[in-house]
Length: 213
Figure (spheres, one colour):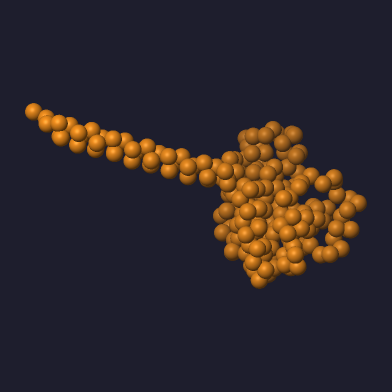
């Protein structure tokens, strides 16, 4: 016959187990929510929010060399318009997989949105240049097959280095953006920012499409 103390112990034990399971589920749900808040749903890469937070953290150290490469796919709009968003999504995922597989040195890779990706290099221009060129070459060789049609992942990259002379994340991204448009004008590849590049592309670039905050 069960005593009152035995019943109480069993009830308490069951309650503790239920509480532990509930807490474990809450922790798992919280971890999932945090991951989803900082990662792109399509590619699984860090998203714009995570990238900008990481960049601002690096820029807070005035002695730390930081470089940014903005990557924009060539002819991506035509792929979407002619073959649909399924083809476009496949290309974006292939770009993400290609960049991740490179395991770039001291770099964080993510998707800013649309067909725009970013590589943040926590090092000087030499390492950033190597990373950007490796990304461009890998994407030039990458293709996606949909039925009998193959799509390329060609991209234009703009590269900019923080000189830490009161340069904000918005300043650095604006420089990389200008360099990227210069690269796009010449058909792709990597273009490095220089002080006069803005005047070079200002009259020929499309209306500004992004705001970096």
